[in-house]
Amino acid sequence: MPHLTVEDWGLIPYKEAWDRQELYFSELLNQKLSNRRAGIVEPLNSYLFFCEHPHVITMGKTGSLDHLVNGESVLAQKNIDFFKINRGGDVTYHGPGQVVGYLVFDISSLYEDLHRFIRDIEGCVIRTLATYGLKGERYSGYTGVWLDSALPQARKMCAIGIRTSQWISMHGFALNVNTDLDYFQNIVPCGIKDKAVTSLAKELKRNLPLQEVKNTLRQEFEKFYAENLIKSPL
Image (cartoon, rainbow, N blue to C red; front, top):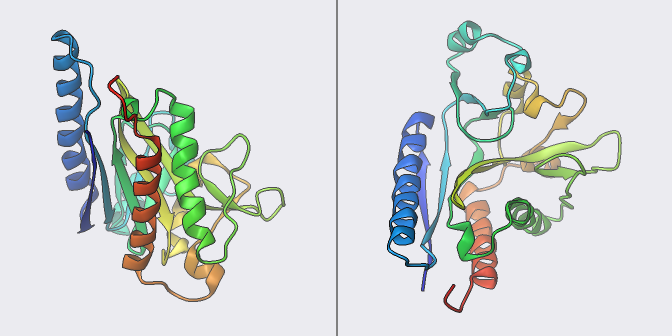
């Protein structure tokens, strides 16, 4: 029976975390393709990696350089790294005080529905926010988790962007906890010009222990995984 392994990588440079993800991603992908050639159909293990990053801006495959308010040379002067990467989505910021979760999942061990997978990631974050008395919401037409999505003051709390191949995923979500939101002024977050970003700390008017938030997220993802795992042989 496959299982979900959860690890905490702590504060780690973005490129190092990306390289680590690629190793796990490639291992699962190669295993799936090898099994398929041998006529073996069985679910594989999945992984959830928590971490924080030093200041970095990443741009997905559909991103636009127009959404960089400051160019790469200015970002370098501010000690903000910049990477064009292979996930979906546009441009976003990662930094200290933000909980990043990377999901190297065999989605087909749960179901074969990418839209549902993203909605389930949102659901885990929404339920985590609920433990702090915040009503996280989905926003029609956008990916991620929002507050007051139906109002003009809608603001984004969590960004999501993934890559998949053969139902193996990588990349994941970034939840603003104690994040310095001023760094988002260097970009048009996710390419959305008329909406703000927020954090748990801003909404609750206090900083939170990151480990506490990670523990709650872990519980939600473990519950989601256990409830959706295909129990019978595929």
